Length: 473
Image (cartoon, rainbow, N blue to C red; front, top):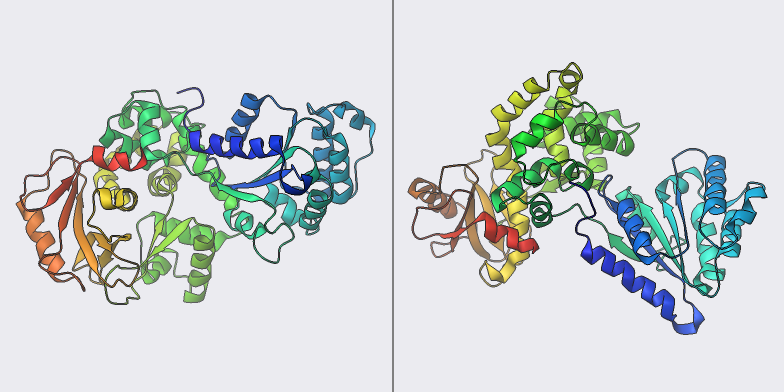
């Protein structure tokens, strides 16, 4: 699949900022800054490139590579000299600046004063780590010169924690930039991009995570198994390499965190079982690793939703693609490299039904939360699940007025995501039983069934894949 798809909201947001640059603001300050964050390979840089192509404005686009301060300064100067900014070529003979104060001073001198321009600094967290003075230099340059020029300063980063901290109180760039999050493509965008029916769109989303780089190599209209068969023939396919590159970039030195991540990716959900599966790490090491993984938004920590407090935290991989990769593809890369991708595909087929049934649940909950009063009882402001240590009961969907300790349970539900297996009376009887065991639920609490293949039971509200997909329309 080729071409640029979706991102209308994000492009519109950048257009609005550019319009502010064109028209100016109070005090004669026309310059604007935006801090863009999102997971690796989600398409942040591609989005900005598309924005630059559509505007046609003079710009400079610098990407840090995570090397030394000196290397970053040299790369920045080279990009400035080679850019489309007016008279930028005159900087080719300049000596490489030794500080970011000097480098940003060169930039200010190259920007036009009478027409809008754009400055992009990609992978900004690398610069912050390589030189602690970078933030202060950027703040000073923005306050003294860049904000007075008609320039849009675009700061991009994949380290979510670092990018969030840059705009917090006490940091040099605090309140100087507007924040923007670039998410993966959502299930509706995936379905539209690949021309797939709703149920198949969810399957495609679960294995790609909505990552544009993977979706671009998925033939339009092709089924998931056809795509996987083709992708697993090539060790260089985006489906295979994206996971390893993401982990290498996110955790270059945290071996224990990667081990814990692997344990969660293989299905372990509780603190104790994660520690065992990670080779018997001591509890302190597991705790530190989980704190790192949740801080970087790679792992989500979920609590049961009911009217009673609970300590039954469960952990899951927050990114569907990374969860799929850790479960099936990462361990299978050596086989693919030996030309036996067919064996990896067999392993996916064997574990697919069970894996998908679990993986789709958080996606369903997000869809229901987005739909809100459109599909759920009034007052449902939180959607989660409920479980006990023994998993009896375990309820896929719990709606409530707040989380994680609710005052009122508004709805309970079950997810049945099987082919040719509708939600039937047996499933309804099980849901009724589990509802009676949920703290805060009553016999009158409404019930819903989210089923891929229909519903034959009466007395329960049924939601189809198409209705769920409309949550992102």
